[in-house]
Length: 454
Ligand SMILES: O=C(O)C1=C[C@@H](OP(=O)(O)O)[C@@H](O)[C@H](O)C1
Ligand SMILES: C=C(OP(=O)(O)O)C(=O)O
Image (tube, rainbow, N blue to C red; front, side, top):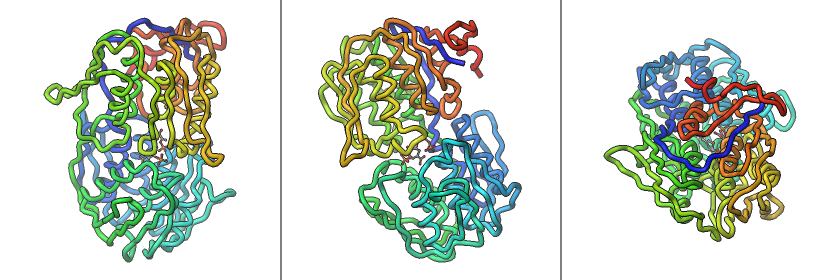
């Protein structure tokens, strides 16, 4: 099944920004590890937070969904096994944190995932956990998923992790470290990418009463044995999800209001707002109404500058889509981590945008795919059939790029919006974006945004 998306010539309306996926996932984890009852207000309900909830339930947490919040009865240190196989589906964060936490369980746990997840790099995490005393093995080559963690506890000590593959390695060790027998030190080698995600982890741990300290450059960490404390947490808006609505707003005349935006987030992807301003788009935040407004952006986006995305990896596909319409060019560097995401996102965007007629060149640094330079145009013919490369963010970004083309494009992989932004198609439908489910080249006639609503 493909999704046919008709172009539009204006974009206006009021749209709800989903809650943050990383913050919701972290709050589910701290609630699970605490003794007592925690609540997570404004939690995101999507497949990947559901995967985190189910993984935590397997460790014994009782999680119930209420209107506007989650209630979590945590396990504290006494994990009560309900299942010995943890299914992390496609979520890197679930796999990595569950693999680390399985080390402090009394008995063996298998942690697995889908085909995409099983292809992702896990070896540095397994090595670091073994340095801390974990008894863990992969049942496939290259220390990838699935793994068997024989449990029995983490002794503590010093472990080393690379900073340029995934920040989730550091996050995973940090979540398990307080439950080790002795203090844990983490030393990160090389440049530390995705620092905003590590800072979000540190804030979650500190909020839950964990004794953790980190150097300013995020290369050294010290965690003392300590207990997670139950707490109430409220999650912010998700700036990666907001980036698709903001990008669409920037490409068309009209007035776009994004609601449920509270400000003060630690997310690196907030960078989408200053980047849009550099492109000449005014984005106004109103704390009183918790909203962001884009009002009649300029006719063409001001390009010819460079953005370093070292700390905001998840908006790389959105920037490629926006770049297709700048005057001059947009150069994006520091995106090397994205080759380890669900798809190799720079290659995916460059390949698919090239099919749409966009002039985009992949940039390599020391032979590593690290960014791109895209030279914009006013519009493109459209009429292409595009792949999401199995990645929700690639689909959502290509969808936005296609809106300003002259004819409809067809997309595979649209169902994956459920992973992080289930209301994606219904939100865009509010602006009059027409989407139709089609079989191959013919029209099946179903309006998908309605089919997927709710
Ligand atoms: O900890 C997290 O919640 C995440 C960390 C980042 O991973 P990388 O450091 O691998 O980019 C980010 O890209 C991912 O979407 C979510
Ligand atoms: C990469 C993502 O998540 P994860 O790394 O947890 O799979 C994502 O949300 O796009």
